[in-house]
Length: 345
Image (cartoon, rainbow, N blue to C red; front, side, top):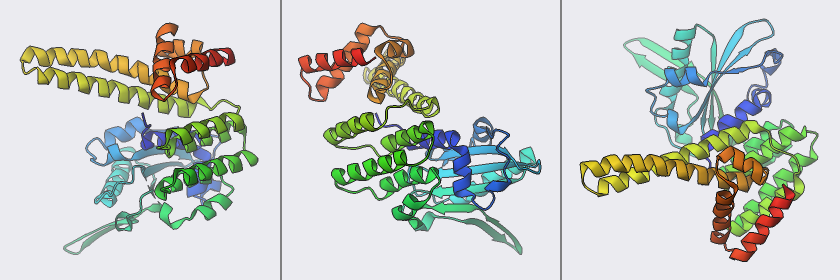
């Protein structure tokens, strides 16, 4: 199951907020007082943008910071994480800003990060003119297409490595071997820099998940390379975002399947039973996907997986064994793999 890119964006922004600010607001970052921890106002933003049709396709973050002079400042950040062409993005940007300004009476600056290639929808302002009245709202815009990989590679800010990973998705090579070399090169360059291990590991996890391989063999080789290169644990901030998304997807998929089966029965009772079965299947599928995601991360012992997923060890081994056999291993090879993993834990 692929982790949604908006979840990855939200997780990395929250985990690397100081680097994020320094990367996108280099002329103003020195004015921000980071001794006061930034606050993430996602709940408030969701309420304000409840009727915003584009909000489910973007990584929207509302961040409250304080300047060194004591002024409270709000940052409204929109990331077109899925590469959609949003015809009304400029309107949404304006609406989001004025709603925040109207309700909370705080100065707001807006940032749009465009990760797609359609310049037609790379807005930098909203403008409206009618019967002699005119409104013009300019907002900050970062267009990834205008920043080549070489430029990002030279930027010392750790968030530049995040943007380089996103660039690989924007300009994804057709050859998976080429993508493998690019991702591995980025990981190695990141590890060679003077960056705290915890931060480097977090960015590596973003690199790993943002542009997944389609070829399972190359993916397995890359995963093994990461185990060799990176021996540290990844901070839980991104894990929590990823695992929450996996659980949500699994539950939704199971419920959907159950409801469809109920409808196919063609009777009212069948639909009702289908919904109930769907919820049960959703929970089961959630636990299965959660188990496999924890297994793929290769960071948790079987005992920890047992506690996190709330399944007994026999069921966990059954799920992973079936997964390994579906990946091409024999039953005996899967058994050996699991025995080796138990010893590592």
